[in-house]
Length: 377
Ligand SMILES: Cc1ncc(COP(=O)(O)O)c(C=O)c1O
Image (cartoon, rainbow, N blue to C red; front, side, top):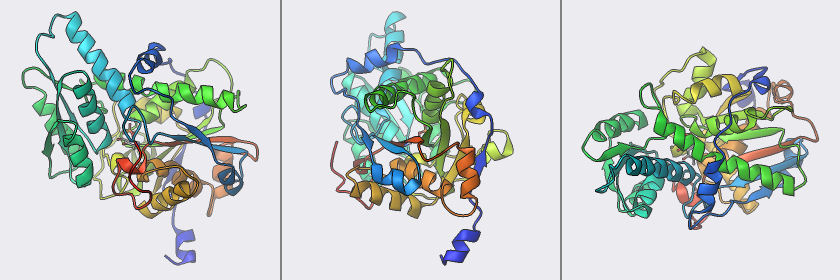
């Protein structure tokens, strides 16, 4: 696109003044202890990238690198492990655990693989529904966890509907990372599971001399469950000015941005995107009130922006797939081009601000990635 055409383009952006003053209840603290006791647990790295701080005109930039989390190349196992643990504990408590259970889910890739891994780890079965657009290697990775895989010709929302239907079979439980009215408890556990990631960031920033916490956190968003966890973490603190929270979606699947612009949750028709894990058409019902009230801003980025961001991260030694790199792509888009000064002010960013980018997957998670070796976790 010629320079003048790109600068005339209206940025997909929505902002909510006052989000930093909004407060909610915290996540339960025992989640971290549960994760810490898992065989493959270790905090993922929080990598400081001073070059990005210079480029973005802020004080310090850190990237939370989720390219190897509990033995898988994306953050999703945090939610799946806690939710599966809660489901199985509940079955045991009700004396309903005589045989194995089938954990059913739909996925854009990472969540399904995590559920399949947890099913295997806990001696259960998994049945995973995969929509169109998920790379064949990602599908194979789910099958390699010994899950039954059903490929769906339609988009993610349709895969979720089919998974929900299949979970009505005997000895089956839907472990879905999105909620809707009537199905909210298990997605709530998944959100709780993600809280470990935020707890680690607190400790890592303190160790890096940033005891006051970050000034901005950028989060890649599909249905908004991870963002709900991040909002819960930073907006449940009793005092102090929390960070600005920025959600980043693909332009082809910006259901949260669209919902925020309309002031109500809506389903959209999604297109194709390399950011496969973010290719969702409907915000989670339990995430919506948090997204509406607790996000400072939402932005959408195009596939080439995410690819460029992934390439930059790779140059600096961080393995990041297109979804993971979306956080950097979104922040870069917000802080450049026409209206950038106003957006910087909205986000409360100054020359000494500390920024945290959540890089939610490594290149190995998403074979759509053109950068990196695809190896790693
Ligand atoms: C790598 C990656 N990043 C971010 C997300 C977004 O999470 P959520 O759907 O909770 O918004 C996903 C979801 O699958 C993902 O796989």
